[in-house]
Image 1: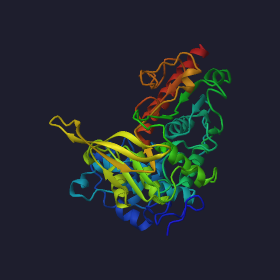
Image 2 (image 1 turned 60 degrees about the vertical axis):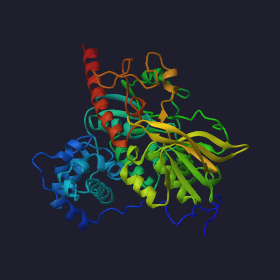
Image 3 (image 1 turned 180 degrees about the horizontal axis):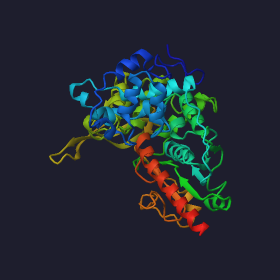
Length: 455
């Protein structure tokens, strides 16, 4: 029986609890022993941050979980997160030679097991006793900001993170649903970064509350901007401003805040028995669809202008959404949002694929009944920091322009940027990949700066 979500979250048979319980110790070691320990490990080449995958799997296979955790820590500050939300099938697991026989190693689940075991048993307590190398301010505590902070703290830098929300974590806390990534896991990973000496200041909005110039005046040697893409894109079609048209990222954020007790459930724009149409077919769309199902939506339909083969969502996320009852309407281009005082449908052009692989209208239309239309068609950076700081250039789409040497520095000396604020929105691990390179660039810059000052 469905219960209105305004009084109870239990509106669906599906739970917000993490779906995958992970490996037991016996299962993890048995899985690790299947690794062939290839001379040329393609799995490592498939990992954006270059994790020593054969190394930590071999250590685990021998029962040395502490060594396995130490190997992972050389490259990753967020192993429990990566083990859960990385698109493994397109990266390390997809590159595994055993995948050719459809029996590839479950690398992500092994990484998750090692990280969880380490945290639960307190194997590694990080303490940094290196001499102070310099002071760095990090704006934003998402995957990029946390990676830069962790990497620089390990090198002996005093790092302070400035976060606009009341709790750090960025998209990890407010953008990825709990059934994919438990919030206690994120909090645990952040605590381990803090153990390195990283300070986190919350409820500080850079721009209005403190400027980049003020940070330099406080003695920071370099500043990293890792604010991601805060502004969602919208559809310029009739009815776009009707009540009931909501950004998918806003919807996910409201659910996360409500479940954390930070606001009332009445703020969530989807109620039990709603018919929900979602425009887009990336991971955000899948997350929104699966969340709406859990809130008791009567029907959830993902609308996409191309075919199933063209979706940008991870295959596992798409298959999970379909298994949970989400419908998909392919080759459908949103043309108008129907309704007078509120949304009651989404009108779409029925498309076809031409000889060149492009979608073309057929002249026919269909209307998908909907009480709520969620838009999941991408995001772009906000100009809040750039507009309050002189000397930081952006391209015509608003993305921050950076240089190769030192890697990640903007057009203003000492100010660096990385992650989605520089590149098109991508995955957690790709943001981490870029952030690691920027952290190295920051260390290189400060070393040169200190050398010149001493001369």
